[in-house]
Image (cartoon, rainbow, N blue to C red):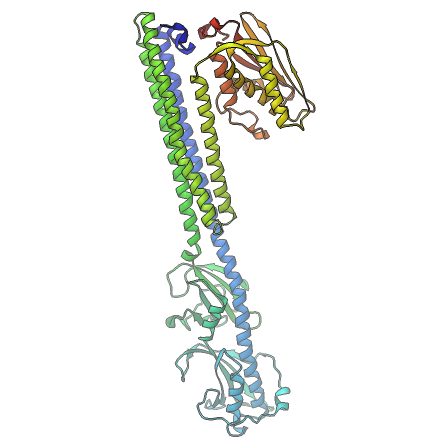
Length: 603
């Protein structure tokens, strides 16, 4: 049996009595398992909080967007209503002026008044009928009379002298059914007085409710939307589309938009419409020159249709992330439990040292193979959902990108970047595993030549940098050249990265004998760090300067430590903020010392 093949960690455990070393090996694993589940709980809480916050934000945004859209539609609808009622009122005013000049409807020639009404009604699509009543309330003439009318004889001079404005004599009545067609109409009337002030009759126009169905189509309201025209003073519903007969003419006194003194000319109300149970968002606007209130209404369920779809996506994404985190935490938990079991089995090996070494060597070789397979298994198991996340995010962006708002596209982009970042971390973890399991091939290695090659390559990729470089000549050690190159690539890459703000930058590679070891160092004049953080420097995923724009995976220095320790050396750092950093590492002077026990190294 070759004792030299044993990892130093095993020899370190075997060098301690069983009753002292075994209990201490279990406590860190228990603490690690507790930390794993604590981290999972914190991350799960964070994911839930973020998901709830996004859902609440989308809910508010959907309601605000609907309110804004309804307010815009209401202003457009207000213009149609003002024009429609204005044209009808102008015609009524014109005809009332003619009747006043003639001192009554009976002073017109036969068919003259009827032809006048027909002539004016032909140019008013919103008016179903124009009519004139005598002072006793009897009908004098109307525009939709079926009898053949003669030519109108009203003089052009009389019409030109009539005022074309709407004055205070106009009255908007309650909606009713037309006696001729049976359809809903809203009368607009004006009383007529002759020159002496005597009441001589009434002129009116019947506003057709069916006309506003065409306006509804022209404005292109969404399915489920409702338009309303209310009498502001009498607080009743005049016109409504889609038509509901039971609600036409119904009192709406509880609406804040009606009444002689409303709180505001324009307002948005969230409540069911009069006589309905469905919750709706309604935008009201009061006309400036007549006692009318127009409104457009939309069911909240329709307003939140897109929100519900976004919520389902957010919940699905959060659930997927929680599942992945839970699976990772469970895998790590099981791994630590297995490590506990292995440590316990190691403590029970109380046979001869040679037997324990032989048995444990076989077990560790199997364990290393299992850990390597486990690493690749984790990589495979994690990459499959990562590819699914990235693929579905890409499909979502391509197929539904035009339907998503800026926030939705941002979420998709961030989701894709996070999946790619996790894939990079998996690659780095596999590299770290390969460093730990790769067999050592010890040979005479020219440290100086490797360092110069790495620095030349860095300078070639960043020619704009001004960096003073010095590499001591004759730096040689017995080591695995491939692993040492990886270690120097990480150390020199960090020196190059963290000295980017130094003008000029300075990087030095040197070494000297240090007892039974070779001492090597890499010095830079970069940003440096507080020595209180040095204990975390060589732990995986520990990044001291990530918030300052120095990106990295946090695996590089952990890999360097693994490489140095596998050679029987050690690594440490000396630094101060703003003055730079020096990374020291040692390597044995002879190949036989590469596999020495860890307890002989620096503590």
